[in-house]
Image (cartoon, rainbow, N blue to C red; front, side, top):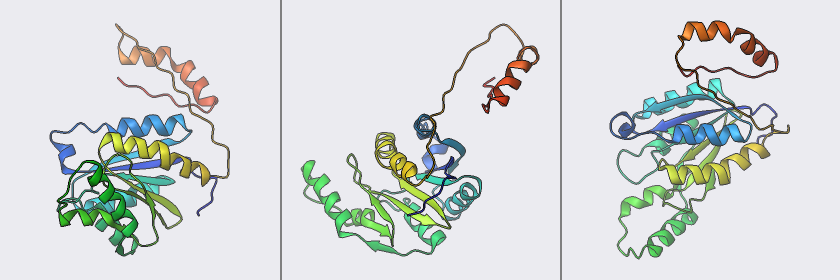
Length: 223
């Protein structure tokens, strides 16, 4: 297990060509809210098509700019679900069939009274060699945790309900256990101003922004 007190920021890579057309990517907001509540900063966020080179490039960027990386999406059984393969190429770890993962998938189908299971679903039981499997209590795609170049990469499914549950139940405890320092929960406060220009507001809030910065806080404008 990687043990470091430097895990303060997390990068998020959201995989799926559908994110560029008709799907609202709520995983960004889920990740930001859950991470912030537990004392971690969402440092970077990249949405990428179902493209192996694009996935690898996005993960590399997040590895360079954050202390851990979460990848959501691309863990399904279809031809365009290629996150496993991309991360396998990136890390140099082979994909191996996990009977334990397959048994969990079979149990999910049994609960739904589905008898005929497509062979394609066995793709979801392929895990990176040496990775830690993260169980999925809602869907069929298990997640994974792999250590690479001194940092943690979490692979989670894309559906928001599955993503959120596994983020809270598995990822956050893992991040906390891998940090040797006590994490302080981040607190954010927001307020709205109407009827004034951005330049005027900036001028009038200069002192407040300086005080927030002095105290180690961060000021963000949503204008």
